[in-house]
Image (cartoon, rainbow, N blue to C red; front, side, top):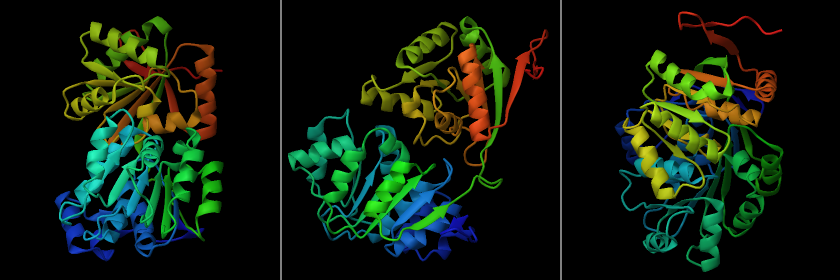
Length: 393
């Protein structure tokens, strides 16, 4: 791990970080002892009210890195919003809310509310009337509440932009800057992400004061253990190939990614015809339905989750056996975030990319070149076994 360009020790236990008994009880309840590198690096600076810009691989514990200091700073006696977390998607916002509530389990009087589109705004207004101290929100829905004057941010002290690059890339730059401008008493701003884009640096330059720069590299200790494979198949055989891989690998929990909403729905139909339990999540599906689908997947009541890239980030699902790229992703970073759904929490993961056109072949070659991914070509032999393919010229 590097802090301001200097390599530092990234090993610490939670009981070495000067945390309160209440927060330590919450952490111990979850069975955690050793802090991750990003937590070891960020928590002391955030506790000291310093601005932080942190880059760390997906699945390395960024939520606790900012959540622990935010919960520690909250005064339960003050019924004002003191901490704000902005997230790019509803799914991620809900995950963050759940983790923060776990941290508040023994800190009586601290309330966390989540604001996102797709849920009745009246229900959220009712929750806001209970005077929460922490709000987790997507930028668009928070702007709606600000216009209605149902939320006040003038007493916010800590702000976090989670998955900052994704949020700004999705076109939320103006919303984010408008929101930041409405918090005159903000004491620190944290920006956490898997990658640091030009837009993230621009926001940092304007809104942060001498930020502490923390970088956790994807070394052997925190690099996900993911075996990555390429399968060249005819387009019409992709669904059969998915079914075959599921059967061969015995995978019980798989995410299959498609590039379009229509393709996710089509793949669900094709897999269900083959007797495979699966459902889709994408932007056109009602939020309440998406949440129920994700819960079924977490609970092991569904074998395959078929998703667009809206689900490639922020899903707090640690035990996905495999990821299938039914479509090769359009963006290099999408590939990294897709396969990052497996191989989490130091488990072994597998990712298969199904290639059926020259365009997909070129895209995957670009992904290999630009991300440094080690993707092995495989195919089914005459016996039906998966074996290494002859190297392509």
